[in-house]
Length: 233
Ligand code: URA
Image (cartoon, rainbow, N blue to C red; front, side):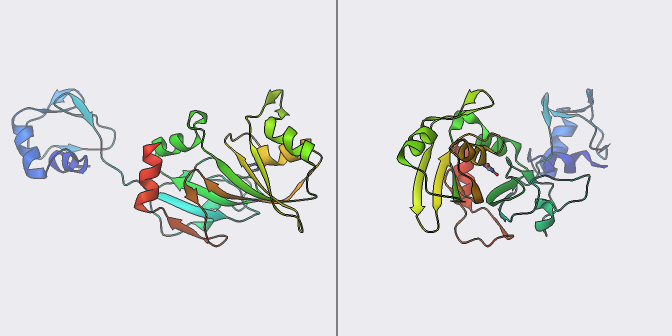
């Protein structure tokens, strides 16, 4: 419970001093009742309105990039007590969660945030955000297989959107694959459809967010520019 004027300030509405004036002037209500009493206390379940608009405390938005290693789950909790990406994050008190998902055995760029809107921007199919993967594969695909792969492959009866497949090394065979959807095990299944197999799979970028030299298992906060990029989507 905290004093109404302090609560209003924490909502970013005004200073505490100004809030006292607004309360005195009858511009503030709690659960539908106008409050003019100065020390009135509110808790998290109370609905506070200022000039008839509901106000809520601002929570700090936080954005993390993790280089997810293989052998951990992209989830906040696991009922079987397996290792999750959350076990790799320390020193963050906000309740964050992963944006999208990487398979247990996929490594690379994963964003975690408490900003639901940003998470939505990054995953919404409408935004056509390129996700780039590096795959060490069994063998270099034939030109016809590359054509087939890039034109779209039927997975679960629905064709994937056009994608890109580039050969970045012949020995060992490594491909760079760009997709902009996020279907279940999409890259692995697309490779299986051309009789190939991802031996390792790593995500190196999502839109304008790049993994760079962030070490496996390490995380960092996004820069101001990266946050602005997400918000601009
Ligand atoms: N495609 C996959 O097959 N796995 C991932 O983790 C991400 C994309």
